[in-house]
Image (cartoon, rainbow over all chains, first blue to last red; front, side, top):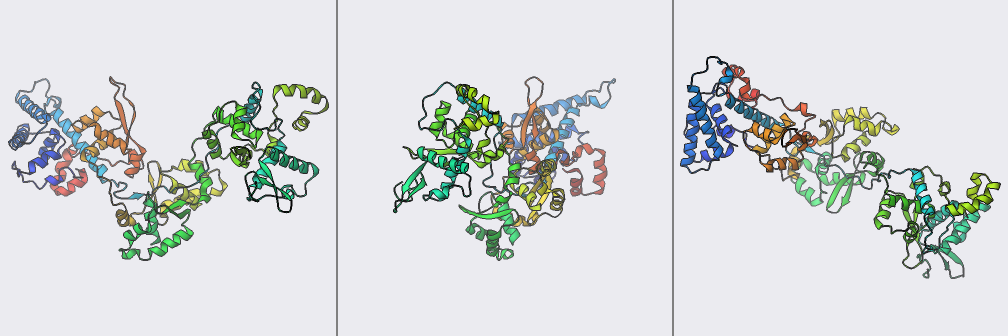
Length: 260
Length: 189
Length: 189
């Protein structure tokens, strides 16, 4: 970033400008106000007490030079020239005796606008000197954190129960595509789910005694047996016959013995 | 050297390949021995970070042991379940193991793959097997996380729900004999 | 605890405020003493990292001692800001909330839509509302990303600036004592 003013400090005093410099100079300005501010600073003039005649003379000199070198200038440059001429003319008029205070200085509005621009330039320069990411320091790129669990959805348990209740209350529907337990006994379902997950641990058929809970009471045994039978009936499990004529149970599709 | 290597990885949006690292570090006498430092990082990580090999090179990631904490930071605000998701979850909870066509039967409408996937991503349902019928449909069940989230000890703890008509006929019989808790046990099978 | 805190900062693209950390960590018995760990991190950093206070929170950045190395990695340096962009940004930063006509008044030239768009694309400015005047012009403000990019803890941390010309009488005094370079330091221009 070119700091405004600094690359231009090498220019000679006075109005002479080397042939190539004028174009660069004008390009570096965002508009006529900046050219004017530059002139005032170069002449070390006081912004609140601008010698309008001298500034206007220099300003017009640059405009003429630009035109002579066929540089394109925006219309605002001519507008500024007209404004300067107007201020110069009003300065020649006698100040109304009733209002000798500063407010009637025709240069005041110009001074305000130059001050605003000077403030902006200072602020821009202040920003420019702040440490900037990727220029003066580097921030970390946030490290990935794979497989983060998603937040559970916002749902009340009772809503699930009610949803099921409502489904049950709906008018009769066609028979289900596969027969399912219509009167759910959850102990049985729990055991069915457990059995399915258990059987999937290894891709092989299981002996019945592997699937029955050890040291179980009669009810637990009965539920387990019932769950296996129900899974067989639903064809979620399959019976597999081994070489010795021993039947084993396999998750449907696991062809541990080649014939599932 | 370990520090410089960490600085490179930490500031980089992309994984860094061994060749890239070599180009950056080989000519720098201060960085001699960076290969050993890289091996060390790969082997034991650094604090909460582990160096993993991914397509195109290596990158640092947070060790999964901090996932519970990070999940709190990177929460997406929990969103309510849509009616379709809620019904689907209810059917699975009460009828598991169940196939998608069966869920559709209960709900009376098609169940999109997206709904199943979203419920799955939340960790509440999973595939427990396949039914050995044509098409080998997946059998859906709820997960232990589902039970844990609602503080249910098992599926048995799901509140009993009966369709009105059935309730009618059973009720008369049972009411005289049992208290409400027993009703569930007697009539469910 | 130090590790858990680091994991949070390492995984976060945004600065984390003390309040945010408290909300995440206060209820967790495993995270007791996180404030002390935070102070430690602030004081001495961790390996190549330093924790800095920025945009109302804390953020990890690479210690400047590794800048030479990082410059080799990040060869495509970010494009420097044009004078027009920098000035426009400065007006918004120091005068916000501000409308585009007001920005143009400050700078003395028209502000192109392109400049506003570029600043917006960098994530540094945004529309915060509309002024209740005819035409309801948009009110521009800077974003937390702006603070983060320029290492500012808050808008109050923007450097205090006086235009040379405001100094008026000061200038004359200074001029007699110092050469031009020193003036620059005092008055910024």
